[in-house]
Length: 82
Figure 1 (cartoon, rainbow, N blue to C red):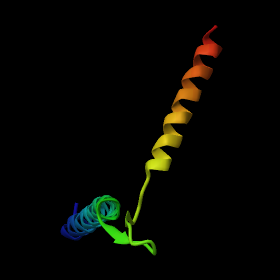
Figure 2 (cartoon, one colour):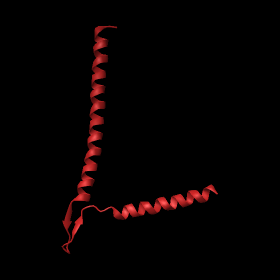
Figure 3 (cartoon, rainbow, N blue to C red):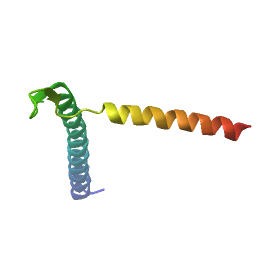
Figure 4 (cartoon, rainbow, N blue to C red):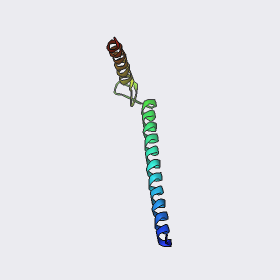
């Protein structure tokens, strides 16, 4: 192989490595940022019009709904087994 071919292959490999590392870092940072934001919204509170402290993001209703869905799914799976 000529020197030019080797240089081109090395250059392409370095560029590919930089692109993969950048994408991985960006995705990881995006996920960490999302988790931080959700934690912040759950923990911090504001005063509503009644003067009560209310969390910015309260997912207790969602958690109860998911619990109900899991129970219904378990019941359906038991009925399907019979």
